[in-house]
Image: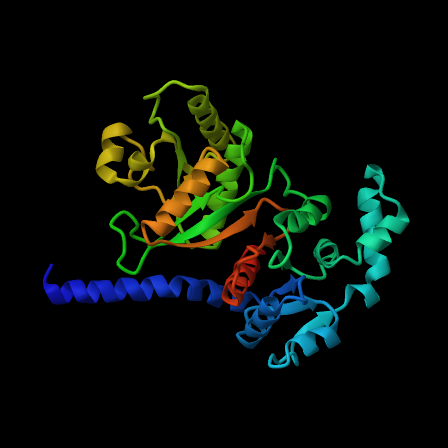
Length: 347
């Protein structure tokens, strides 16, 4: 390739990498969904709410006391943001009754439900359960458990899904990557469940394929990863992945999925052809299902730190309705991106 052609190709890749998040935002704008942000006490969340409102990414419902939010964020325009204080909301009693009905079999009393419903994350989850919002984003200043607990207790998992999981959208560096023609990959589960059963891995693979289509616009080719390729090693961990592939194919026969595959066999065409001849996935995978959290978390951080990939996530999947947890080290721009992705998950 001539020097100027290389320069033009590099420029194209920079533009393409930079537009992936913009593409997600444009799709979110077209949907006009209602997304609740539960942490009005956090300045980053308030800033993100203003950006989302200004860019029309979603109709934002911000939870908190309006006077306190205004006092703590004097330079943020709150004019067009819907702000609800759970403690004084006219819907509080309705939501408390709903929470009581959902949790009374677990020993929750009516008084406990009334008190719990005042908690912003529980209030947001009850809004989502009731259909008053389309999605929820929280976790900027609270732990993952604080966000996922009301999700699991109130929203629960989607029909047929055994567990909630997460994925990361991995965006290739501006210089590109010869094995990533679309400029993006999906890694799962990088941030939620330490271990999986075979059925759990299968369900995660199916859920991640849906996320790859809806969020990243990919035609998912799913590699179920292992340290073995097609029986090259014998171990219980390998058998687990093999069984997960069998279950996934049984549940979703149209899915392009293969395994067990080593990472090089999954992504390098020549290696895939050599180690797994005849596979439609080997050498061409764009969705990678790691066998456990330890491997996935290490893998995405290697890609991020040594490979120059941008990691967006972790993004939750498997809930009956869209609910996402933020990192406590997030920036306002990360929250904006999470809102856009949550909007896309409503489809």
